[in-house]
Length: 131
Image (tube, rainbow, N blue to C red; front, side, top):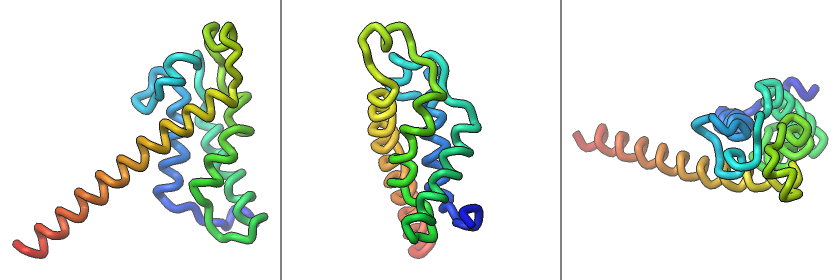
């Protein structure tokens, strides 16, 4: 069943960061969410995103959830869970366009975090090895 599909810790953190990024007051907030989102997605959006990603992976014959699964499913999962600002409505910016901006910004931030984390771990490992 889909519930038995594992989700890597990094992929889970990415999904949660993506949901948090829809909140304009969050520390994870993107420029797009600060400008165009009045109310972000609830924690249940994160649960729905992970559940849907597990099903997508299983249907594709894979036994793990990928970042691409999360990115692709962000649209159907998040579009109806965000309340847009008047500015977004007045400028006729759709929820999907905003989600696209959020996904792009979060992907860049998350890659930088992972690289920074790996660099720190590598330097710690080297220090331990040569001390």
